[in-house]
Length: 483
Image (tube, rainbow, N blue to C red; front, side, top):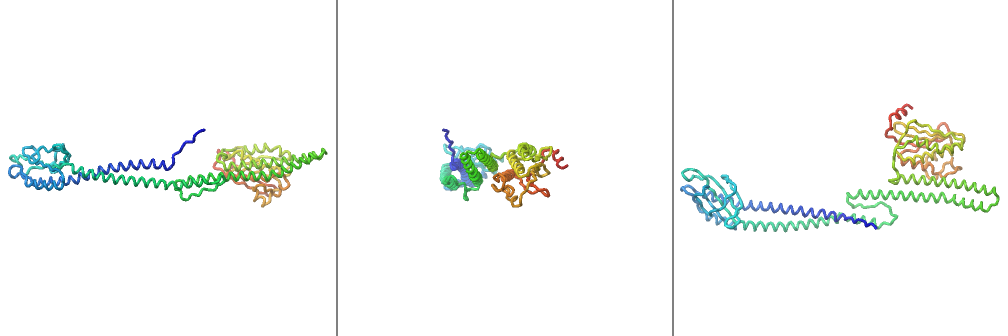
């Protein structure tokens, strides 16, 4: 036994895609928040360093002929109170001959630009520092007016900054984790709520009885699923129509075959009781006539069922290019013996070139056979039955004309009703299905079935009219235009 593959549910698919993607996006957002927070903290602390740097710079003097700094300790103590960390400073000439403050305080790797402070991280006496450095020309200059620059440096340890940054990151991480959990819960709740109508739809369909083919009513389903429900309803309507055709066929068969079979049984019992050969022969002839009637009725009901089934089944109706002239010739050859048996002149008037339409060959043969057979049966002996195949720019037509009694207006209006027979067929064998078969087949092909009495001659004209898109070749177009 082949195991059926297990399919994943829509909920699991959505959750397996949404939650990892959501967590990944939130992690990226957390990394970006960490990066931005670090930059913001550095900018805030660097502004304090820059302020201390500018304050020291304003208190540097070279007027005495040497490098001096006024009141540096008071400013540094104030800066230490605001920085909450160890503070270092260094003031030196660019050549290093004069220096005040913490010696060997590291310089940046890049050359300093006069008047522009530069911030960098460095190691000093085993500590991690954040250093701000500024270079400017000395005014007045030292060393006998030879110029030169003075370099001012202020540094603070990174312990306080790192502690503040870590605390901020922890708070941000806690906040983001809570946000992730809330968003995950919202996504899970939304997915379950979104698929709830599908679960109800599944339960409703499972609870239905086997013969319940009514349309599925699901007004609260998402719009993306509505086309699927519409397709299911369309498929169920096809099954409903097919079941109706089958029930109709069974009802018709039981109704139409019950009486002939009962008569045959009575006739058989009568023939078995009789000893007179003449009476037995009469009974056998009556039985043969009843069997012929039953066979014809059965064949017509099967043809009608096949025609209706072809219109309902997707695989039953496969249109192809067919030649109406060829179909008419084959039908006439088949029914020619029956026409000769009634001394009828059965003829065909058609173009020498094909008249092609899109259709189903066997269905069109069945329709034309019914029309020609009716004409043969209802036309008086030694009369004419003519089949014509012609076309114009828009339509292809197949007509069957006879010189019979014709039909009344009431009979023409209800000619395609099953088992209904007109006044001309009351005393003729048949089940009243021939024209119903023709009407069904023409409807399948998107054509029209037209019945009309001939004027002024007596008789009936039955026409099958099909729409043409274009003719297969210019020669046929020229010939039809010439006619």
